[in-house]
Image (cartoon, rainbow, N blue to C red):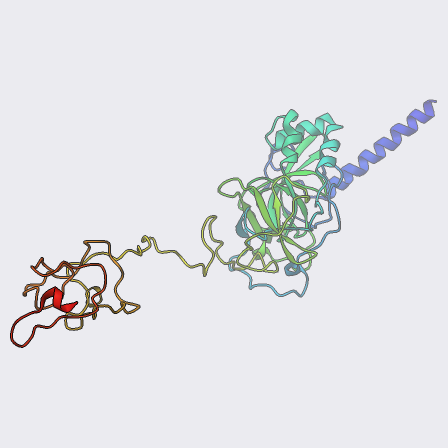
Amino acid sequence: MHSRVHLRRTVSALLSAGLLLAAGCARDTSGGGPATGTAGAGDVLLQPAADPGTAPFTASTAGGPVVLPDATRSGAARSPSAPGGGRGLTRTGSTPGLYAGTRAVPSCDVEAQIRMLAVDPAREEAFARTVSVARDRLAGFLRGLTPVQLRADTLVTGHGFRAGAVTAYQAVLQAGTAVMVDGRGLPRVRCVCGNPLDPPAGAGGAALGAGERWAGFDPARTVVVEPAARPVAELVIVDVVHHSWIVRPVGDEGAGDRVPEVPPPYGPGTDITGPLPDVPPAGTKEPGTPTKSPRPDRTTEPTPSRTPSPEDCPAPDAPTPPGEPAVDGGPPGRSPGETRCPTPTVDPTDEPSGNPPETDGPPMTDEPQTSIQLPRGDGTDDGPEARR
């Protein structure tokens, strides 16, 4: 019985020694201390997408194969390196195409991450303290993150868990690394090891990275992610399998993926580390959309003017013969008494007018006039009786 207990203790000691030896093979990037230290200028680790490192918080929760974007593969066409490399390019967390994934396939298993932390109270407490949330709210915090993949080599501050304490280090995560990002687009968890992430600290850059460099690595093309100006409801990411755009709601693992109604102004294969067109702010119109004049529409009712137009009044030298219908296309009809014509200044008996003055002759009727009685040459008139 005693020998079995001794054997178990020996095996445990050997395992612990092996873990310590492996940890000793890596740089100690804790700086000022294992729990709160910050990496120095020379402590930048190059971490391949599938490498969990030596101080993981949990086992891997990364889902599916690692698919590297075309722009990071060896021999792929890339934009020229930016001058003065080292610190890297700055991209906002809401930049379309900054992240990738596969439609309806989660890049990380969020629930598995929650379960693995819950079984070890010390790790769970350390993790919650690192991401600045209460332990009893950690599960909600993790469920609010979005699993995606990096599309560019990204400079971050990583946090490992070693000997019951949190370590901090600067690292470059290879494009294709599965991460969970928050509502402002910041990477917060590295899924292959469960380590919390923060934006990079200090002046160190990828050019000072330690470790084996992968194909396509370029210190001048590493990305530093800055938080979006305001929380976003969804991220526009690249489907690396179908080479198309995906809109993934924040906090969703892929079930809500859909095609964007308005795609970004560049294609999904665009090198995210190269020059990008300006993305129009939300609420602006797309290029080419006609802009409606702010002036009100003209009314169809003509506006009266002081000088009547020639079409507004009939020509005085061409009156409409009595009994003939009006010609189509003439001036529009008016209500009784309405006129835009000038008042005649000559004797109303000389020319026809709209309202003839009263005379001593027979009253006018609505019936059209069919004949005109001319006076006789002797100046007499037979009168009504003779005309019958």
